[in-house]
Length: 248
Ligand code: ADP
Image (cartoon, rainbow, N blue to C red; front, side, top):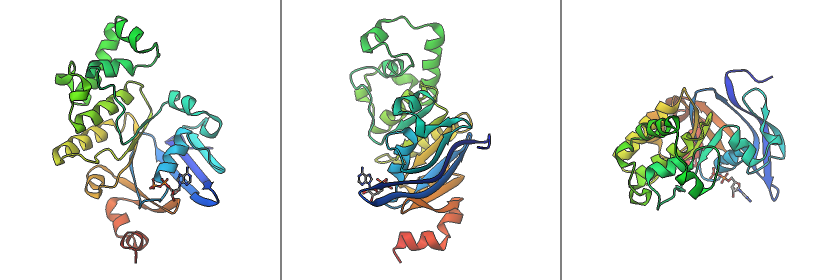
């Protein structure tokens, strides 16, 4: 029985690639509305963990539930996405030749294809939704600009906006601040923290200063399992974490 406060429940999850255990008895519980950061050295299993949540990789064993009732291991990748789990990869996949507004329009549920969508008249409600997302991602003034002309940071925010158009309950975000300026990082932090509560957000990130600035709770992965969990101060003072990061 999964507690109703938990949005993502992963228990005893393992997966091997050619006999190598990339995920090894992983237990991870994300609370509804939480913003959780996942850190860990290269090869720790962070990407594989995200792949399991989104259904791209099926584990060899274990339990993965979304909310109290959805068994993600019985669902396909598109079913999981439709059920309300959105994933943002590090490299943005926006439509560079379309405007910022159109990018959001094209990300609305109900896929009619690019041209049918762009020629269809939006309802007032749809227009409001897009405006709200534009405001939230700080791109209201860029709405009619081709997305290809945005800065690196703005493209990342647009892609988060495109995910928001699908109204996900859980957002998985991969290295959101890689390559960003300090100012862009600050805005990204504000955006992600503003999403928590209404959504649950899981962020995989290498930049420790950024993680410290946004996360109340951090999970350290190592060798496919949870090595440590707690506040940034707690995990940074954890002997096991120090050993792994300093290679001692
Ligand atoms: P991280 O994202 O934390 O760097 P990954 O999840 O990418 O870690 O990888 C965990 C381990 O699993 C690594 O040793 C990686 O080489 C291995 N691995 C990941 N995906 C595959 C795959 N499809 N085939 C073989 N090995 C893989």
